[in-house]
Length: 101
Image (cartoon, rainbow, N blue to C red; front, side, top):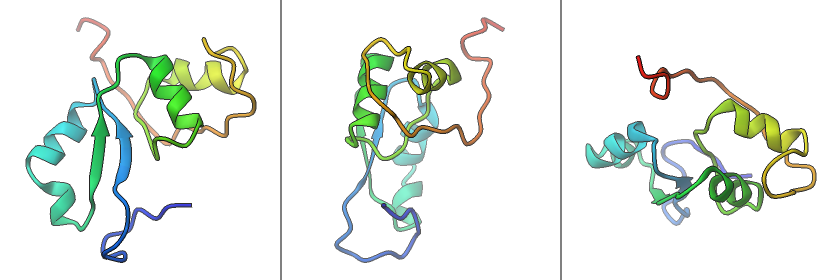
């Protein structure tokens, strides 16, 4: 399990995140907010939810921001790519970005 605490060992690996629509991650990175808090973040361009979820399940990403329907589909075994037993959970969220408001 990886820790997300500031001040962790200096030899730690970067936290791996899928990128794309997740503008708060890009803004925080551009403004140096991760570095200011002792975190190194590696953002990988993410072309699709399939890429995002399958790589998250395979352990190539540490955390992700995604639409809840992606999480539910993979938890219920109905994702576009079958992945047995993913241990995914939603922490919190909300957006109107895709609603056209």
